[in-house]
Amino acid sequence: MVSVVLHDQSNSIEKQLNGIEQYLTDLGFPHHALHAGPLLRRESDYKGMQMEDRKKLFNILFNFTRKMPIKYFCAKVKKSECNDSDELDAKLTKAIINEIIKSLDYLNSFDKIIIYYDNGQNALKRVLNITFNSLFPDVEVRKIQPADYRLFQVTDLICTLELTNAKIELGQFSKTEDEFFHGAHEFKKEYWRKITKLHI
Image 1: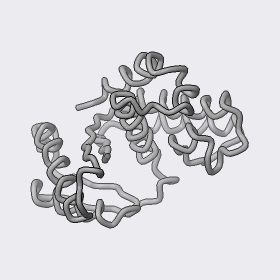
Image 2: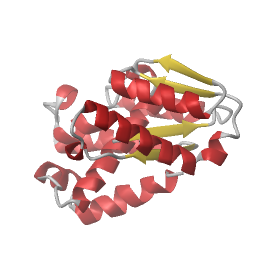
Image 3: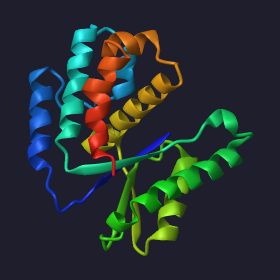
Image 4: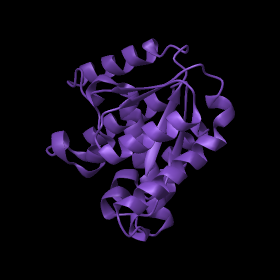
């Protein structure tokens, strides 16, 4: 599953960035990179935190995301249906291209496209680089640190929500997710329906 967040950089998000930084500072998390999955599962930096506190941080990121002047798409491939990494790369490339084609008019309205990625997965980096460069005349790829880019954390959140919804549809909603979101119905109502309004 690959989520791509699209942001027109002529639309400033400085006010929203200052707002989330203030919220996190007030809670004792200054300059903290929020990670949706670990917040949900009580992992990494959040091991010792109660659910109420983790959910507060999760909701800060969620509400920040909802206020962003962004759009997103999500390309999905079932890894279990791929025989090897080459087939996975090929299917993922096709899935990303299909999503880009749906967003072609919007993406073609820009003179230049800049891709921000942390190079976490070399195969995905290659797929994104080749795919975007084959479809658009002016593409730049920049390596980033997730902690330095809130929109990267937004992408992580969206991917977590997309994955959670997919698990509900497949009947694989875990006990941890059920407790965190207070059931599949509440997840759909409070998170899924709201975040999909940003889907391009």
